[in-house]
Image 1 (cartoon, rainbow, N blue to C red):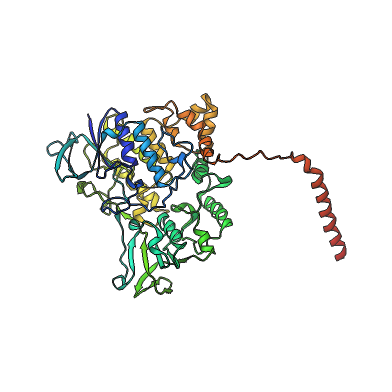
Image 2: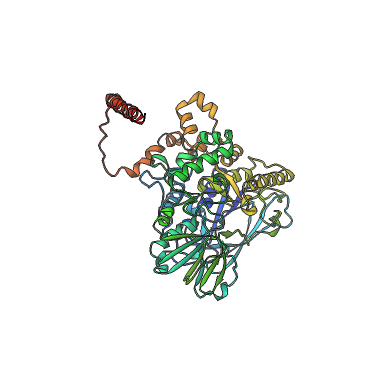
Length: 537
């Protein structure tokens, strides 16, 4: 029976895991190497090796109703898309509300996690930590939750000629703000969300900014139809059902056509090699506008450096480049974990449902957040923590190792069919199916048929409205009595930030008042066309 659980990291996933352990009757101890909570959302002026890093202007790509914890809605006056400082404030409110601070040990770094010798059946772990004074301490835990994140070790490609480049080369991990690039000629390599944000921000004050991409990207803004947040409008159970019923080729055609009506991706140099649904979208509100104004130029993949210039794959050269920023992602690494956890075909961490290593005799260790998701991250890691806590407590069970390995390989092959990058395909998860699968293991998956029969109003909200995290607190372990009300009032919280000016109701006349005018207009049009035909003859 698991009792004491080590939680490594006090970011969003670590905080949610601490709470999940408490709900499951476990005793969590959270080790945080910094002096504060927040993880990646805690902006720091100075760079700290081994820690996640963000830039000063970062705003979340997920709206507040979709990315909140499932039993703790964000304040109604928060904007729909939050600056990182507001997200950190929300995490502080969460910690205070559920009294989690007493379970966290700050300025304590985990240096080693190893299965306890002689106790393979118990699944216990030796955990070694070092505090701010450099003092080492050894602990014994019944289980371990790794919540230290994956945006820690920058991935820097090696291009020919970079040694002779006189300008500055850096990674997006080092980027803070555009001030250092004012008046310069800057190349940004990589068109992920960070690459798009950084290129746009620098282009407003640089002499010229170039954005290099290998594959291109489908670019979409945070705002959907009628001004609704993008994820609120599109991450719904009803649309998920439609996606399963309709041919993927048709869906790709419809979505690409709709997006190109706003700005033609081929015309703007953004046209990707992949279809709309095959990869994660680039969410950026301003990139097309900067291209339209000529402040930003799209370029193909970088090939090499040539003195102070750069050569691209199409043979074009840009001279006198002052700085290059590589937005080329991160390498996942957990130096404190035993190397025998890696069972993937390329020596990577092979995790059952992106959470549990199948190599363990007993499932007493889980790694959270090691995925690429088409949806909100915070509810996903929260559900991972809830599932892991249930497994540790013996209330949920995993299949045999052979079955887990088969599922891992099956998921990898299915994802790689629509994804050319092997590494990325193995990390890919789809939001609603993945959440529902984990919720089924926890015992909190909403029963839509039962809702239809017992609460049709809530059923309609759950099926046709956004799949907000509150749906996973309606029933089962961790049931929250406020979940129903949170779902019914989610639209009010979305509207609240806009209620800063009283707007009078529009004096709209009924449509039938305009019928006589329409008949007259129609008659004039017919007469004009008929008269033109008579003149032709």
